[in-house]
Structure formats: structure tokens, C-alpha cells
Length: 357
Image 1 (tube, rainbow, N blue to C red):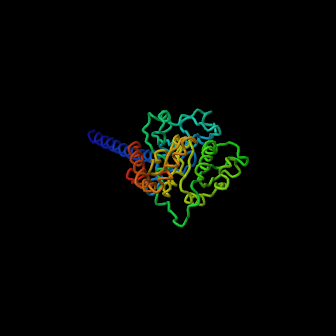
Image 2: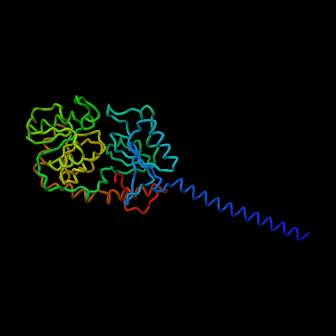
């Protein structure tokens, strides 16, 4: 009898042991699977497209954080967001498109997101901000946010100044075409063509400045600029970069613009910029007497031009950018911000983070 009890006891203990081992293995498997699901590695992080953006570490590996950079345009964008979320990816918002995430003032903008009543700050963990208007930060004020634009991450070492390119123009202004009739559209609103025409009259009549207008071929504006302002159609990227280097300063009358990259590119070419004081983003890279000057409209642009032209040799835009922006400075701040606010970040040892490789 004692022997039978002993045998049964042994069998019971063996059963408990087996169950315990299986349970431990299941826990390990589940934890590994959960970790894999919650923190995708680089190989299974999707390469996204507008209105989403990828972020990368200093080795060019994709981070498991997807940026929402603009309003959704279709049901497909909604479905992609849900898909990325199910994959365990995290999200951040970035203000790099017009007034986003605030109501967009451009009357030619797509309205799908308005009809759907999207609340983008509720979809993300943090927000990268470009605004200085307090009201514009209200939608994401409850989130951890930092002042940073995609243009701040430009690697200045990739911008090579060609010393053989002569200065042909005093200024360059870019306003891409909306249509063949040159009637108002998304681009003319975004680049503030109406204000630009008023300022061009001052620039030509009072200062006799030579300029190049990119994208406004066939569009009418003041005859004060006849013979001294060249108008060309849209230019491929590399040709446009050459034209920038031919000018003495960049003219940016834009308001509804979240930090145009052309400002940063021009600064990196060591060329100062003349920018609308009321621009939504990119204002933080315009340092008076260093990287360029501000103006507000046709009534005060003359004084800004006079200052810029009189002190032209004193501006040091590329030096300032090298010492204050770029991937190793702004990118380092971005990396620290992400490490702080995303516990499941797939690379907490990166030297810097960037958005555009």
C-alpha cells in the first residue's frame, strides 16, 4: 500500500514538473512574440509614403515610430494608420504641411480630413512643432512637443558650394505653377503670389534688382521688372540648386508654409534669405544680420532690402547653420526626445535621428 502511494506521489510530482516546464516555455514564447509584435525590428518596419513619414537612426535604419505629417486624403490613409498600429508601431505628429494639425486655410486644399473629423493629436504620442503663434500649438499642447522641423535636419556636408557659378541675380523667388492659365490655386496661395507681385514692384522700381522667378512662366506682374527679372518654368531639382547659387538672396513672401526646405538649402549655400515675418514655420532659422532678414509686406520690404544689401558681406548663414542645426545637433535633440518618450523605441543608442535620408 505504501509502495502504491509512493508511486502515485512520484507520478503526481512528475506531472506537476511537466506542467511547470511547459508553462515556463509558453511564457517565454509569449513574451518573445509580444516583444516582437510590440517592437518591430528594422526588417519589418514598412517604408511609408505621404501623409506618413519614416524616421531613421544615424545608420539609416528605420525607427519603429511613424510620423503623421499631413492630413489624410482618403480611406486608404485611415486603413494604413490602423494597419501600422496593429503592427505595434508608435506614432508622432509633425507640423510640416501648411497649418496642420490646425484647420488649413488654403482654400484649394483637399477636405477629406474635414469631413472625417480627424483628431490627429489623439493618434500620436508626441508632436514636432514649427509654430510660434500660441494658438497654433493648442491642439497638441497636452502632448510632449518640441520645436523642430524636417528642414532643421539637413546635413550641411551634402550641400556643396560650386565656386565656379557666378552671381547672375540679386534674388530668386519660387512659386510653382497651378495651371496653364496662371489662375489662383494651391501653389499661388501657399507661396503668397499676391503679396509677391506687390513686393516685386518695390524691388524693381526702387532698387532695380535683377531676379529670377521659378514657376511663374506666363503669369502677369508689374512691368517695372521688364528686362531685369527672368521668368522660367518649373526646374528639376539639380537645375534649381544651381539657380539658387546664382542669386545673392532668396525671397520668401510665404505665410501658410511650415518651414520651406528652400530656406535651409539656401542658408547652407551661404546665401542669406529675405522672409515674411508671418511665415508659419522656418522663422527660427532666420536670424537678423546673420542668416537673413524679415519683412511683413510691400510697405516695409524696402528697409529690409536696404539693410541686407548694405551689410551683405557680414551675413554668415552657412556658419550659423553648421553651429546650430543639422543632423548632429538638431538630430541629436530629436533622438534624445524620442528616447525619453518612447519606451519601446528600437534603438536607444543612436547618435541622432533624422527624417529624410
